[in-house]
Image 1 (cartoon, rainbow, N blue to C red):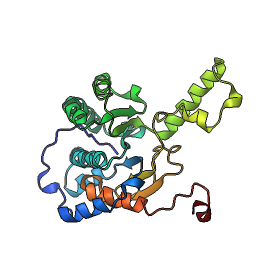
Image 2: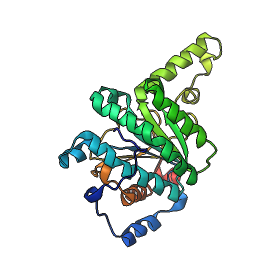
Image 3: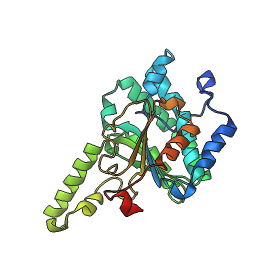
Image 4: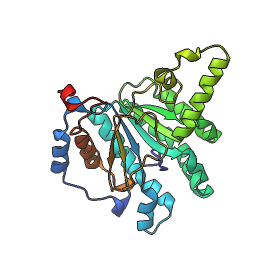
Length: 271
């Protein structure tokens, strides 16, 4: 689930999938009901390593070529008018990956994020980061902080990068902070409910995802937004992340728009 959005946009050559015709893709796009767009889409970008192995390359090669998928997906969400897009870019468990892989990704992030800020600003995209960012290298945090500040006035798509993130860490940290506020007399324990708890989560400023997409054929959510996905529609595709294109996003959204979202009620009540 490691991926760098901010790596240089080099031409992947023969590794880009052919995909459908432009006419076919536009047909999918225009089939989407703009009044029923998910406000918030979350994506587990999986399959980079397997994709690289299929090419006879190392894992970094797969992460590198997954960049194009991020660029395309962010662009597509911005074009459609999606308000929030959360990408699971690096989990707390990913720190256990080989040192060379992790350090390579961090260096790529630092080297290229500055180059991408003008593009984010041009497209009115605001960058956010959630996760245990204290684990990130100081240089990485400095560059991320600068990018977050420079895009803070943008009012279009909110691009949320989950870096050094895991949901169990997030909920544990929320419980710790809540307990500290109770101990300090800032919070009455009798007032604690789900709405109070949500205010201590990393995502307190964002609506919960309505659609969660996972690529690569895996059918699990891997410690990602466990609390926030309570009522999300889950969509799994066998497409490996480096092969993910606009048409795959459109297909997921169209599938979402066929779902009956009852939130505990009956169909008759909704009707």
